[in-house]
Structures are given as structure tokens and as C-alpha cells.
Length: 99
Length: 367
Image 1 (cartoon, rainbow over the protein chains, first blue to last red):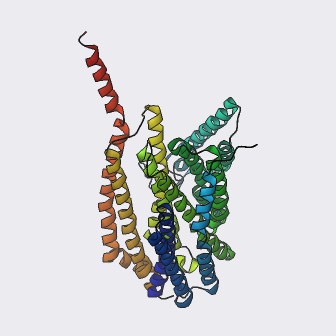
Image 2: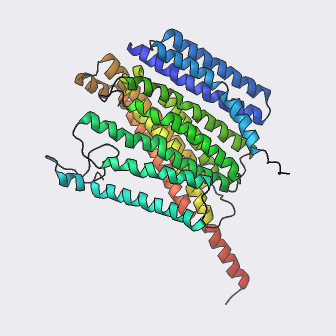
Image 3: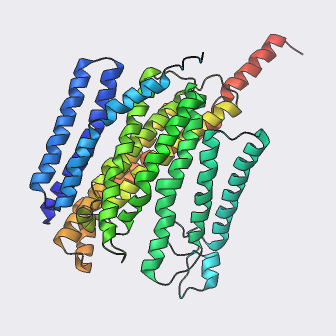
């Protein structure tokens, strides 16, 4: 790994997680205010995250195993905000009284 | 603990009175015994509370189970192991499994109790969430230990184990961010204790950015080969620790003050200043350390091949030097925030109590 490749790979990994955070926060803000723009923004953030994952897989000198892991974790990030959100909503619903 | 410095060869007296030599647990043995005592008192308090109440809730059960490894792991601070690989192997059990397992569970329990107080969330909800958090944190955190085993003489399979579980660690942190935004949004940031609430939200974000973002930048073995032990690691460690624990502890302190001073609502402007200054100072410091660390990894490790000459040249590199200067500048911002925080904690609610007493005295008229 050359010095420049080191920096580029590290920054791409950082952007990968940062975009995951943007996806999560924008998704929540969109659901809270029922804002379509925010929800669209969250999906754009996720698409960008996926592009960064592809960039990591295609252009960095990481071993194949780590590239597969990054792409697989990118897929794993996709359901986290909606599933967590749905679960939180369900959890906060008042329990129906037992008959 | 750094007041006393010894020149010359170390003896048993050094271990007892000066320091025990290992990073993070370097406290001299008498002070380390003090730590053991404090933890035991804490364990006694928790268990005795449960016994007196004749009831063990889900949160208390998790807390009591967690306190066993929390206590036992600290005992690794005491033996003097002469084989360095072996010593580091066990030492990381203490450091990593405290920080990314037992303390995470401890702060999870404390936050669960805090959520009940702060937002009136039902016990059923916080306990369900706590169990999920425990599973996720332990599932990724325990074997995330492997990222400390990359370069200490352990077998090479730790590269795969450490890298894999470390890469998974940001996933539950994203779930926590979603939860924080959900809580903040559904309550529209309205609560009787805004400082505690803001620090709780800051905890989720700080944990994600410091642990998840800064950690993932440098955790895969091929990157870590160059970044290990530089200021880059320092920036990650400080940011993650601040997010995971610093913010959480401050949140709980504000909650405790509200209870102990019987305040209906925690108000004022000082906490806003301390919140802003502490967070700006901290982010500035870790950002500056990141710049210095990148300069070290780039010039000293990747370009210079980790020679002594490369180390010295990297220490003189303008990027490194300016990063360290900026760290100092933002350190002053942090100190200013800390001073305001201490002022706020000391005076919170007291002024209003004094005003109330004065009003009551005026209403009673002259004696």
C-alpha cells in the first residue's frame, strides 16, 4: 500500500460510516416530520454510501476479504434505520389490556 | 499518579508507591487497591439495594451480572508478567473488555434508569431495549478485542477476527443514533431536564462518530499497520470515550442534581455554554489530533518505513506540529467549558432557593 493509497482508503472507509450516519439521521428526521425531502435525502445518502463501498471494492488495495466485508456491511446498513424505527414505534405503542 | 517519578531500576517499592508501569492501569498498587475497594463498595450498594427491595428488576439483574466481570477484569492490573506478548494479551482483556463490554453495559443500565426518569419511558420499553443493546454490544465488542491483538505477537488469525468484529461495531451504534433521534423527535426536545437530555443525545452521536467513524477509518489490519500507536489512535480513543462515557456521565449528574435539589425543572444558560464549549473543544482537539496522526502515519510509517529518523522527521513535520498546537488551543476551549460546567453544577437551583427564601422572609415582614 502506497502512502497515498493509505490515505485514500482510510478516508473512503470514514466516508462510508459517515454516510451511514447521514442515512440514519435523515431517515429519522423524514419519518418524524413526515418530510418526503428528508426521506429522499436519506436514500441519496445511502446510494452515496453504496457508491463509496463500490469505490472501496474497486480501487483500494485492501484484501478481497475486507472488500467483501465492506460491501456486505453496506447491505446490512440498509434495513437498520427502518427496522429500528418500526420496532421503536411498536415498542412505544401502549399495550392493550388483557381480557 | 504522575507526581512521583523514579530514576534508576524499578523494585517492588516502585510498584507499590510510584506506578505499576502499564498504560491506563499505571496507578501505584496502593491506589489500585483503592479502585478495587471502590468497585466493591459499588457492588455492595447495588446488591444491598436489591436485597432490601426484595425485588430484582431486569435492569438490576443486568447490572449485577455485569459487575462481576467488571470487578474481576480489574484484577489483571496487579500481576507483573515479564513476557511482553503475554502481558499485553491479558492487559487488553482489562482495557478493551472494560471499555467495550462491561462499561458499555454499565452505562446502558444507567441510561435505562435515566430514560425512565427523564422521559417517563416505561420500564418494559427500556428493559427490552437494554437487552437488545447488551446482545449487540457484547456480540460485536467482545471479539472486537482482536483489533488490539494485531501487532503484539499473537497468532495471525486475530487479524481476521479483530477486523471482522470491529467492522461490525458501528452497526449497533447507528441503531442507537436512530433511537436518540426518535426520542428527541417524539418528545420535541421537551423535558424537565434539558441538560441531561442534550447530553444523552450527544452521547449517541459522540459514540457513533468517535467509535464508529473514527474507529472504522483505522481498524482494518492493512490500515492499522500504519496508524497503530499514532495520534490517530489517540483521536479515536478520546472521541469514542467522550461519546460513550463522558456525555453519559454528565447526563446522569444533571439528573441526580435535579433529584437531590428537588428541582421541578432544570433551567439556565450556563449549561448551554458548557455544552457548546465542551463539545466544540473536544471535537477541535480530536480533529487536531487526527491531522497530527495522519501526518505521522503518512510521513513516518508509510513513507519513512517506521525508522527512528522517520519518527523524528514526522515529529517536526508542520502538519504534525500545527495539529498539536491546535489541540492545545481547543484544549483551552474545553477547559473554559469545564469551568462553566463546574460553576453550573455548583450553583444549579441554589439561586432560586435563595430567592424563594428571601421572598418568604419579605412576605413575613419585619421581625
